[in-house]
Image (cartoon, rainbow, N blue to C red; front, top):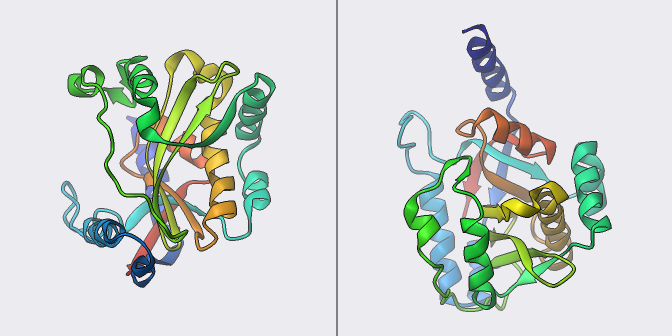
Length: 242
């Protein structure tokens, strides 16, 4: 009971201390790319401002968005994360792993193998996720650096995909929407490598991005909260602007 009360107290302190940021999704810039990106940007804005399903006093993605400001550049971000995160990243490098953007449709079998590598991640995974092969994506390619939906992967020395993630990019935001590592390769730091590599990619390819986000903070388990903080994904209150 005492531990639970302490956890609630710690969460309340974090909630009260949340920085407040305004993030522009730069909808007008979607005029430079396929209309699909205007549509998903508008949908993200609507979803973020909906009332929370469990806590209707709050909006779904306004209070407690897990994010960090990466506007000072990749090297500043790298120096800001915890030392254990950097060690995991270096461990992956030493063991010959590499990271780069991927074409999702070229790796469907490997993606399915990653999903099926363990039935439990942050909770038990549904059978539909484990037993249904991933389908090809039909999203049109973006022609603008301000709006995109990108997939990234980590590869072993033999060129096998062992971790992947999908990121929504809109104006000042890069949001990790899902990230999975093959259970067999987790000890090598493949997911930390992926998280760090995506921050580097944002600086190199999407210069409008200021905020790197990974879902929400307070709804996550204690272990996931700890993991997010390791990579500087702390809770923020966000005012979204189209």
